Image (cartoon, rainbow, N blue to C red; front, side, top):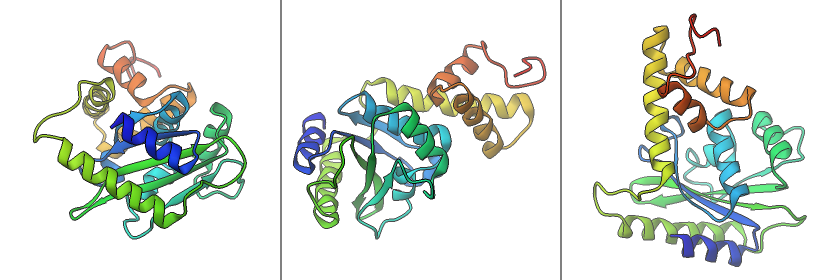
Amino acid sequence: MGRLCEAVRVVADADGASLSLSPAGDAASGRMLLWSTDDVAAELEQLHEVVGQGPATDALQRERERTVTARLDDATSPWPLFVESAARRTPALTLTAVPLRTDGGVLGVLALYRSRPGPLARDDEELGFLADLLAVAVVEGTSPGSAPAQAPWDDRSAINQAIGMVMAQLAVGTDDATALLRAHAYALDLGMADVAHQVLDRTLQLGPEGGR
């Protein structure tokens, strides 16, 4: 998958790319980072998780659209938190998200960023075609019940466990528990996985006793 992701980056003349999967096929269930070509691409993917918005999040819901693009200098962006954070924390100027479509719906998202002025070298239809090829490679290359032995997959499990702990500690629902984790991560410029591990290690308690 790393070679395929890098190949698409080169063909599209992007500066970086990431490939993420959504097991449930929706934004609410979150995505797991399968591969990123560099730290900036990984950071942009992580920001979607922290702020709960962005082009890759929308791409999961827009099966009929080939691409969703964000300009990170756009003050009128529909994703203000994402754009502000991405512009502050990365050199990226644009981010284009392309849904990975299969017969069963959207499997995940291919995200391509540029830190240079100018559009990607491929149009929306060509990017959609490349993403569909990646989707086929993912489906055919993954055995049922298997998962790469990579930290991002473990991080998704940690986030889900931390949400459950916050729900139990504060007697709140899933949405409220997730919002609390996101707010803490955003305030301290941390990733969701970082906050989740703090909750699981009990170094952070989002409740009356913790005071945070």
